[in-house]
Length: 76
Image (cartoon, rainbow, N blue to C red; front, side, top):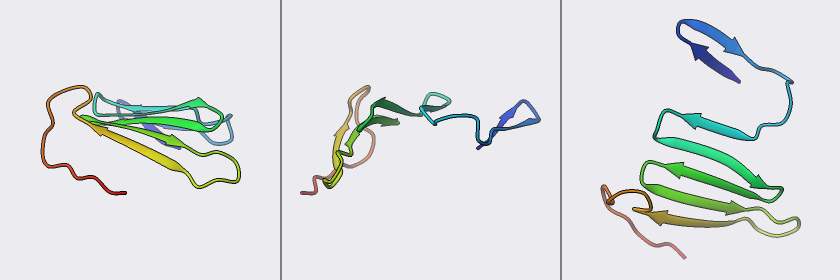
């Protein structure tokens, strides 16, 4: 993983288990439980469940935090 602190490069390798990523105020990814990840991208909230031996399930909710920007569609 590579990050920056000002102009300084900050590299992390083999330092533990990835748990959370926050980029400014527009993306946030976090492991909520062993099988559940939560993701916010702009005005969309995404919950991903990865149960052992099963297909992952993905729930997407637009306009969760603010009025929806752009178009949205439903796929089943």
